[in-house]
Length: 129
Image (cartoon, rainbow, N blue to C red; front, side, top):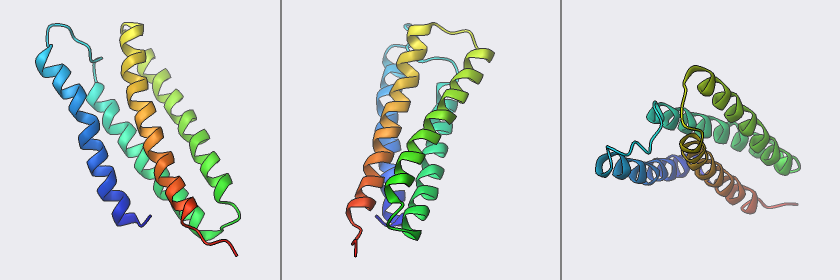
């Protein structure tokens, strides 16, 4: 997958991913389903997903033999960064644990699935000699 195509998919993905929290925030404001600074986390997750994809895609283009390793490394590094973000967020904010888990894993799951799907498309399109 070319970088331009990934950027288009990433913008569409971000817009689609933001629809559910926007609807919840606008139609149920008294319930407060979203954690404080949810949109900051949304942006941080987006930046992290974008940058890790770019680095992994670059690494996969260098060598066909290490593509699988680059894919696994990207998932591992991303998990480490997200756990650091969760730790920092929880140390600075007191939130309901259930709300935090739902919000955090909503962002984590969909960003990770999107990144892995895009990287697997790159892996599938390679011609091994």
